[in-house]
Image 1: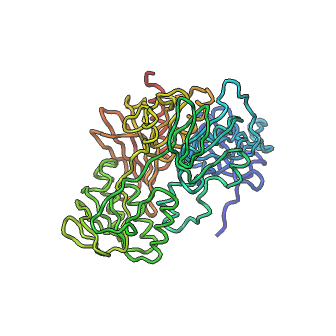
Image 2: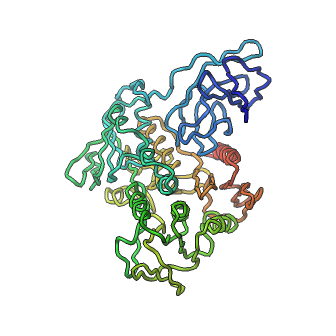
Image 3: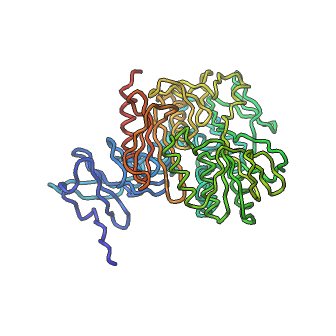
Length: 514
């Protein structure tokens, strides 16, 4: 079958072929590229997102930026810089020349996000903290460290983590890595040499014992300490542990860390049956991944519909039937009463055979360190619109941060990977004195077999759900509304609609009184 050759933008494109706000796919030499137009300005940039290689031509243009349809990364059309996570690396960018009514791609421009090449312009330390310490090496922690260096911060920079692994792709722990389709070498977010080249001291396997906010010092459990001028707490969340009568510790698995996921993979290699306790996003992604490995999967959950509290009954039932169609057996309205060897006895009287149990019954924010240090906490670490805590110079980001949301007018805390990264980026800029308010629209995605649910916004409650399209055809948008306002939108098979919903929510936030 013959394929149409890609258009080479070096040969020129008539301007009338490129509508305002539109994009064309092609190439510059051997590189895939897109031409994008915004008004009279035409840009030429790389065709693929640097996060998961999403096709940017299928995304949307917003001002002089382009957004990826997969996970909503945002790039500058002028420079190629990755402006917002989850992408951290820039896309290539070429100079565009207009000759009459034709535009041509010319030479490649230098990458704007020079922190990735080690050539970032260094900013003076005058008025800036001499040292920055980040407690936590997850999504928020790495995004903050990367942004500090990208912005030219040259002071001492330390990341401290109780985890034994350098920052890794946490969403993949329950998705492709657990399913066996992503090799282990794909998991690190940065190669080991990145931390050396960018002079980031990465301390792993080292829990922090206490914070001395008056003396500006972090005390590690092994006796070491690090002084700071500014501190970012990004300690994330911890899985809720359960006690099951008769169960040995070796039978119960949790999924939060890379080590946890590797342990489940190792256990699954010699197992035939598993019980997943909890029909949360993590629990059901684990179920899908273990089905991909050929295990018999039983899901035990107290609720009558999976994820009804977050997605509503109709979308929750869609997820339920999707898993059933792949052979997952559900025991709803039940809990585990006892384990007797490989027999899992449920509270409804049912007995299920299982070689092990994976518990996905929720997480709680890891705020003990902040609380012990005297920071203001309220079901999370309380921060202002700049992500600064009750102590000046101390910031919090990610799963622990409870911040004032301009959309709802309430303080909220959200456990999303992309949101944590974006908070880390904003906190880093504010450590440098930029005074950027955090007002990003929350976004997450959940993968179940070949179906992905994208979710933008935040709706803890609603009085109406409007479905446009067909859940059965896996082509729909689901809007969660309260008082005629849309607070969140979930999409299935409509990646571009998810981006458009995000842009609509951003416009509402910008119009909200400050």
